[in-house]
Length: 225
Image 1: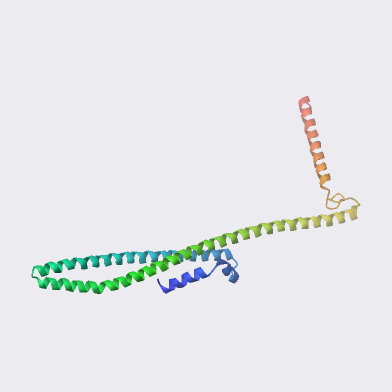
Image 2: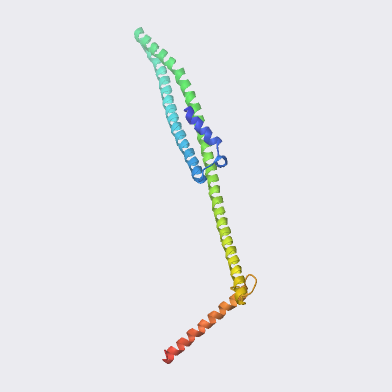
């Protein structure tokens, strides 16, 4: 595994979105957090790719190791047959081949051990990165939810501020209107408005309109309209 990739894995696993927010001077922290998640996913893809390469190489090395061992055993039989046939020259060639195989096997075994170690290391990195990615997705989701909640609260607070401002303007208008006319203003002379009275007035307006509609219909039926 390349040292640069190891460093990137370490940075992703050791880092966190909350720590990133603490350092962030960006005006769009959510975009920066999403970029951090994408970087983590990119590192995961690279580690998985290298894991696949190491696993394939280990498989090939295992096949080569097994093939050399089978060839070494086969040469034992061939040496015996060559000697039985009086062909020492052939036996010597087979022994030479065995020596070559015996020189290769320890190197292959060292390679196999190293590849197995790399494979375990990469599997560990993959598991750690996947766990970190889940953590980052959860943190990002929580951040988005908190922003949405904050936005709703800010909107409600904004509406409340508008309502308060409107009430202040109405009170100011009523004071000026009453001072110059001696009559009640928009609030009808009540503190903050009388909700019950407003409901009664609305009901009265509906009754008057219904009466007007009934009268118009009666005239139409009588042929007066």
